Image (tube, rainbow, N blue to C red; front, side, top):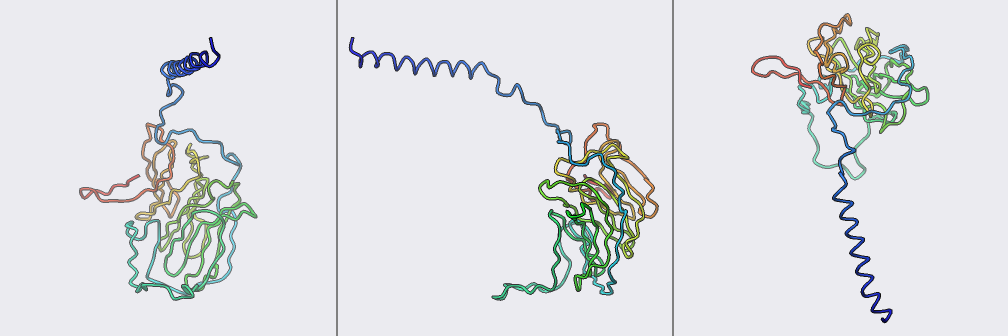
Length: 275
């Protein structure tokens, strides 16, 4: 038998055998047998750097100057004054920029992250991260000049995890509350920066740091700080003046802290916190 004729018989047989074997392997293999159902708030999370170190929240304070400028146009929390992401500022907005671009009144270099500012009564508040000294820093600036007025900070180990700081503090006439990347909460006097109280949800309430650090923006409502801590309690309300925990929401399913923020709403006339 000629060699070319043998190849014509053997090669198709080999190809058929390979495809048949692959088909039998594919049919017999369960492609999802090694997968597990992912339950919201219960996903596996890698251990974070410095997760069990000792952090003295709000330990240090620096004062740099005073700010007398007052503005009625505020953005005191995540999504603005009315939680609708709409600015009520009546300043006219131009239709296009001049050739040289918009004029820069002032600028400040900040650490890496996705944090945003809160604006209240002519002052700008932002939670920054200083990589040189490894510290969360709640900083207060003049809205008019950009001059830093004060900062309250504490050492905490943070690794670059899609950025560091990523939350917006919430501000009222009397109180400002912030949540750091590793969930550290502190409440300060808005004007002076004096430390009123702190909470470590991980240490004190069995919370767990979200996989890419927390992005939860705190809420102050009727002088009560509302925090979604996860762990032992899903949410809690803390008196801003005293730091006393006024109420907690049960967490029977043990849902963990997520990247979401709490919002107040009236549903059928009843005050409700949505998380």
